[in-house]
Length: 212
Image (cartoon, rainbow, N blue to C red; front, side, top):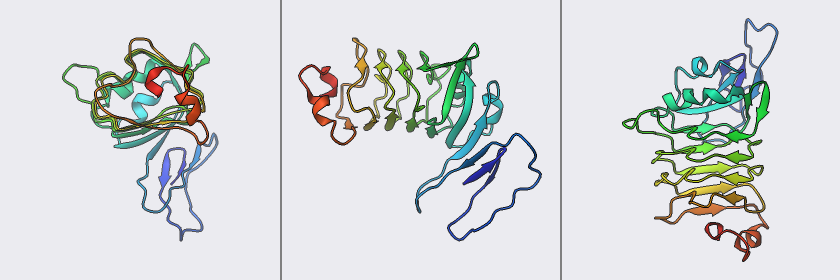
């Protein structure tokens, strides 16, 4: 998938050349390479203040690239009943002109008690350092979450109500700190995938019990 200034072209292996007309300056170029047979994301490029408009069509599989303000998570919350897969690996969060490395409290919590999230998989930003409390509150249908290697702390009840959670892909080679009031569902078995060679660190006596 090739996107230039939000014009998206889908190319198969036989395509050698693509033409995208009316392209001027300030290019936003994204090239997404997917193994044959995998599902693709709709790629959306954003700058601060653009998220709500750019995702108005609300594709089921959405990849957001660029920068958003921390206050713009309301756009995700407003569309949480439509999005099924969300890739934020290449997203940067800003506040007051500075990069913040925090997923805020209630970031993906549905806006109303009657709204049901359809989110099933999430890939979090690769520069994230902290996931705050209740970040995914009332996201009952999430099955898979990818937590980047940069995350150092996950807050209380960040994923506690993700009762459909089946798999955590944790890219950090050592366990991050967890809130002391519970972070993940405890009523079911969840597969935790960690980097090769890091199993001993996750099973060490000093490691918080959940990781073991």
